[in-house]
Length: 330
Image 1 (cartoon, one colour):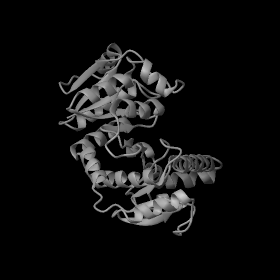
Image 2: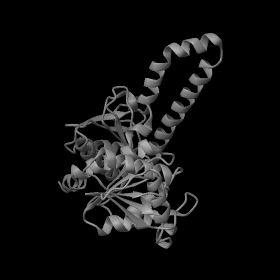
Image 3: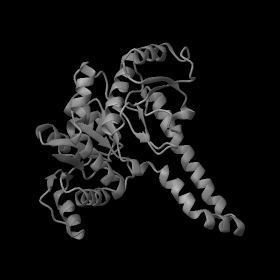
Image 4: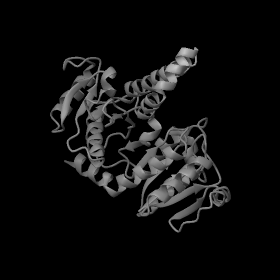
């Protein structure tokens, strides 16, 4: 069972991507990896890391799709780019179960749909990161940007896919909630109210509406949203966290007393920072396409890449695609 890695996607590619791949191979003796990118540069990095493995394959791809390019046009024309070659390998090899990339989000999403295709009966794929929660269990938010405009049926499919994903991670009966402007059943647009009824009648463990301020409280396992509202919620959470940690750091440095207090609280503050570090939670899956695709954050370092590769391996081992396909068919 192989995981394909876009070695040249991301702000710190290829060094951090290759380092993350090496770390993942060292941690999991059953894992097989395919690194896609400039073969000479990847080989040079592996020699620096003094690493050789018969579980690692390198596939040459000299080009890269950047964030400045039109995703659809680039996927169609840059056939030797790392992400396109990676998708071609994934599609044409049955023993390849997943793809991991920290590159252009647009190219990763577009390539998944154009190269792999959707799972039968899935109306639209959804990008679905897992966010940290106060109870350390994590919550999946989907969609968070792949679909700016949605129909109620799309949100129902998001709920079904999120339910199967969380079960693959060991959550026995995932609690599904719908992102809305209030918890009352009659709140929201006509589309949201229709989606509420569909989820309520779906047989899922649907617990009703949830407001954005409660996403990270740990009261549910999956939050269903259209991509527009979901992306705003996600970026707001990221921005607030960045500001708060920055303000806290500046405050600790502001005076001798504050520095002394910060020194006493250093261990506790580090624990809080680690708890809400999204890099430690791995990549965001693109649910709804015919093979597993995980999108790392663009500035992912080796630890995050390694975590995402292991995440991809476990999802393949747990037959996520098969389970989502069966759930939607029902």
